[in-house]
Length: 469
Image 1: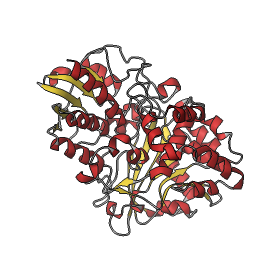
Image 2: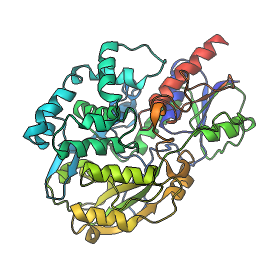
Image 3: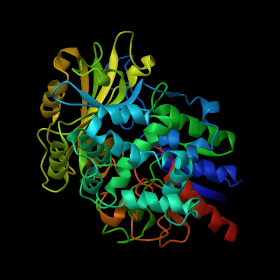
Image 4: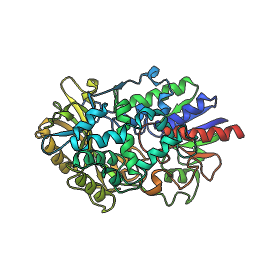
């Protein structure tokens, strides 16, 4: 009998498996797709030689993850590559705000009236960032805070809505950049603890940047899988699990799946019946005949570019997708240009680029024209650079990755206390009514992103149980 079986070979499932195998437990992973990766995969979606990331591409939480930093992933081929700027946010007048490794450069891009306010906001946390990141990403009771005073100060700044955080600034440049940071997890700007989301992304950039993985996000998953196999674990792909009886006998079962899929497979009835999924996204992957022709200079050297003219425009787009149940026009776009940092992603002189906008959960329309009109506002001539495009709305995203229910890449609505306590309001979110069944997906704290911390935290709950039995 195995000690643990993990269902789903996304970053969280693989991290949970690695953490258990490192402690001497026998582990097997079962994945429905023909390759490991989940939200961290790489494919030729458009033309030969153009390597695209179907979901995640830039990894501020990955390089800062306490779980990943404790593992020898570089030994297994993972290399982080950095663009000159982690992120830029252009404006219609041809200027841009930036999120730089330098706090000073970032503050200066907001203008003299807000530079000091930004410094005062972020500089107190940076010397304690590693401890703060561990404490924040280990909540709730998987570990006692190492620096409870700093965590409490962070909570005072971050637990209110991001709209409160924006009141620190007088001009819209800083407000717009922060609104875009919050939108990375598809949360309305007025939501509880959305200020913390913006702060975490900003601090992560200042601490270690927003890199891409050399060769594509698949490199993260492949490194985790290779390390697991060296630890004695096994990985089985092309193995769809429909019920627990499909799996070999084990002392514990750990699911890197959506809560509703877990309930169906494990026979948990209506345990997650109240779980809500958030907005979906409409994503486009491009093969380009050259770099994106941004009007502003800063986005040309940035790995990630946020595209939204103002904080009001971003807020309206988020509200349209999440509350009004309609596709926004203009959409707010999150874009990544991996080949700016990693020329191996495309043939010489060519580029890969992706963009997504928020849409209602399960939306089946086509946002391509609205996305490209928005891009043309800030990069005139963009359409002339397009060699090929691959589109994926909510139905296609859900078909590619069963965890993206209705196209929700955050694996659950980010609202209220559920931003911190999900998939249910519980201090022990990784357990289930079945004593041998656990959940480790990004539907659990600390939530979405390629960082492995949900898997790391869940593994703690699993090995504590295994040691008791």
